[in-house]
Image (cartoon, rainbow, N blue to C red; front, side, top):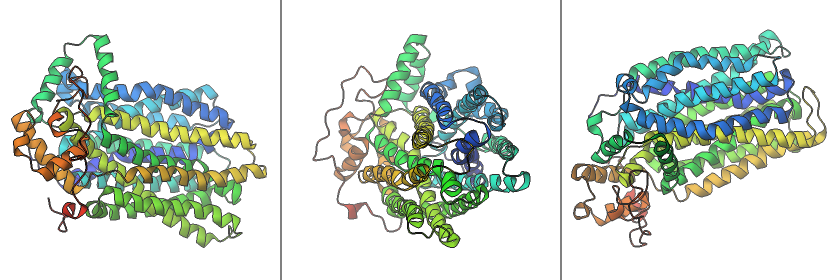
Length: 534
């Protein structure tokens, strides 16, 4: 890849784009179900049906968008504006559709259609946006800085999403839904501005930087019929789940993010219905968490480089899990009126959540590098499509399940006081539900081996293969071979397209099982570089 000087401005411009991904997600996760059931007259079942309908649609739209952005470069618009950046440009005026979701006293069909509309806009922007880091650089540390800038600025948007509704509720009154509309309008304007920065200060991989395999894939795409293109889409999507490290990455990602979705879905109700405090107090506590999330992201950037992503992930998972249990313990111990202790627990929860937010999006930028050594192609878009699909599906699925459980417990929309079963259900979901999902991510992380050292070795061997157009077993050391095979999940001789992973290689023989002799990394001390240098 051609080198380009990357300044602080580039990191910040790219990172600001996640005001859309994180800010709108935070506002939606924390307040939309509350808004639907308090101001719109929807029951929890009706509200969760909206989320479910969006996920059915998203099962098609997100992967299709990933496929489209990978293939858009051969069109006139793609050549003129970029195969990724064209959709970001198109999204700048489209983000105002977000505010349509937050108009009070409309019909069920209004809320269904506006949610579906913004869901499509979100996908159209976020899928190509998530591909830009591996397009812009191959360097591990630069990728970490891009990811750090993204997650840090995402936490700033979460701070705004946490405090803004409470401030507006104080101005307009707790019975007035206009507070939420104005909050969404603020985010729509900010998203339009930051997407303009993303468009202006990011770039895509130059055509000459693609391998021969990638260029052959591009040529083959232009010769496919509609049916063949759909078949290719299905094969490409399925092939992502054959990449072992991507499956592990998804496990960590979903473990951390679904836990937060479960937590977010009931936290406002925990404050309002269990602690019997105002929505403004809930907003303040979420703001406390968001501020500490920002601080945690700053600390996670060097921590991930030093310890590696998986150990750092386990540390913050434990911290957030203990905080979730503490909220329930606070109530059952009779100390729920201790506001200072509530703020302290929220601060620790924010530290854990910030770390959980950073690690998966940091490691995601390296998944396409592992895929390249397997397929010989750059397929960032198809991975971004799957990531966006799983993120939105996890968020909506968590909210949907929470809504159903509360309806079964006897929740009644619009009532300030609920039956005791509702309070106990909220406490169980907030604590045990959150910790149960976190445990799944923790277990998966025990097998995740990508770090600064292993990625550096992987990129060195990828450059050799790219130059030779094939695997070069005569030029690899036993230690490097073990690292590459562990990350790729298949024997070295079957890398660089010598397998049936992906559409381009579909007719080739599958890779044999990985030999145990070369299927594990060398002893840990050989992987640690105390100076953090490749």
